[in-house]
Structures are given as C-alpha cells and as structure tokens.
Image 1 (cartoon, rainbow, N blue to C red):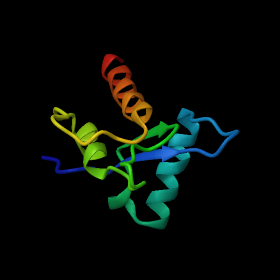
Image 2: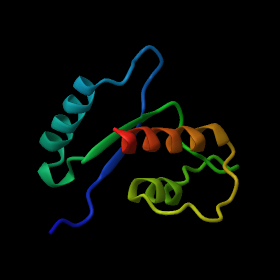
Image 3: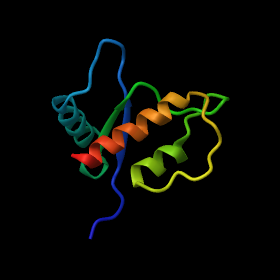
Length: 96
C-alpha cells in the first residue's frame, strides 16, 4: 500500500521548455539532494503558480489538484489563468 507522494509544480525561466528528459533529470536531482523519499512522483510544468491577491501561492489549491479532489469554493486567485492551466494539464494527463 502506498501513502502520499510528492508532486512538483515547476515554473521554468524564460527560454526553457519542459520535456520528459527534464522531468527525469529533476526527479534524479531531488533524489540525490534530498533523498529517495522526497523524489516527486509527478512533475507539472506551469507558466505561473496560482496566487491570491496578496501574492501568496495558493498551496491548498495545488494540493487539491494533485490529489484529484473536487476544487469546491475557493477564493478567486489573482491570476486565474494559472488555475485554468493546472486544470487543463491534469485533464490531458488523465486522458493519456
């Protein structure tokens, strides 16, 4: 039986693109630096993280998406596009 596994939401700098090779490289790096227990099961590349109006990352919202739960009633993020991007990426991953 497996418990919770880390999921990494990664925002790349301009000029870089996510790829399967980069996912493997990041997973390996985390495994070496932090240990195998911290190695993320999944890495999702985003243009921006969802933030509230004061600029704090909405971690609860990221957890909801990572666990595949219903979003429910949330405070409106300051950058709504990031929320739609996360939803779109998880729908694509589920279809494959």
